[in-house]
Length: 465
Image (cartoon, rainbow, N blue to C red; front, side, top):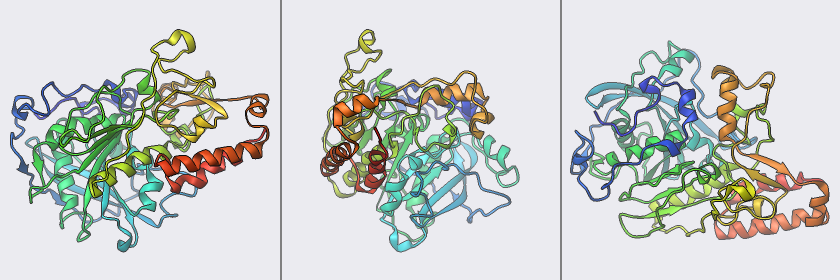
């Protein structure tokens, strides 16, 4: 059976338990990858580049009943309607690991074909039921005309629980994820896929936390499987909220760990432009493991501390922007400093080195930590007792236990006092000027994208002291 790490839900583990295990818990591929024959590592996987057999695509699924919504967490005013995007659902069937499968594929695309950029963001759906790679980059993806493709690689139980009639045909077993990702990816690039005759120039695979683990486990399959015309299926990779050291592959890879990973498991790979080792590590200072700002699973706030309002989407999108330029135009991304570690929790409670405001030192700077009004930190805790009327997701996943998991993965913020803010900035208007000047610098350097300018500035303009 093709397997590095078990697929959580397919192995009978609940989505709740899967979410509790961040990507830092995934096993690293066996030593020797990047040079050793694949056959020595994974029985049954080809040892030379091999074209996949394209699976079968259904027509668009339009019922019966409602579609499972895997991307409900959008920034206000920056959702699919604003960008005139459509969501289309399909079933794809084939054979993986020697057994038949039927999976779900969701395509989020411009309503106007002429708006398609030719670039595709693909992801394996997180076992919690979320298309996090899309959620965490949505405004950038849609403002650029990119297509987002979501592929189910874990148990379909939550789909049949949601709508048994619509999803009765879905069937996925443990050990099939690698083959499914290869086959569906090749189908998307073909004329027989859900994009029809639209030409896909490049496609990258992303994921966050658990779905980053799925991506990392897929990399040995990437090294041997090809499209029917023997081209790469995925032209680059972007695992986010992932802290393990990742094997070398023959296409660019940008990794984005967060404060949670930097408190637990720090990647050791060095940036490289060498063919076969193209890699960047981007650590954004102050950014949390999950989006705490727009995440419907955290509304209302079930945690003891105020949720961080840093827009994670604005910074994960920077990584995707640079990855697309790298794979599509050959423009190598800028290199970045890493967050400094003092590995001493006795001085400030963190393994990271913190500045005088309690925020990380080094890393890729954001305007939120360079012109701060708060301390941003990882590892929130649930409120005790559990708040009344928590989100539907938390209720479905055990109430207090669900809150414990989501709060552990969320970041929090501790606001400075009005007195501290007056000492730092004088007046709110002076603060806004300083904030906007620093934001302009970061945009010029490529560390903040203009599509998020107004959203970020709205935070500064809301500050009063």
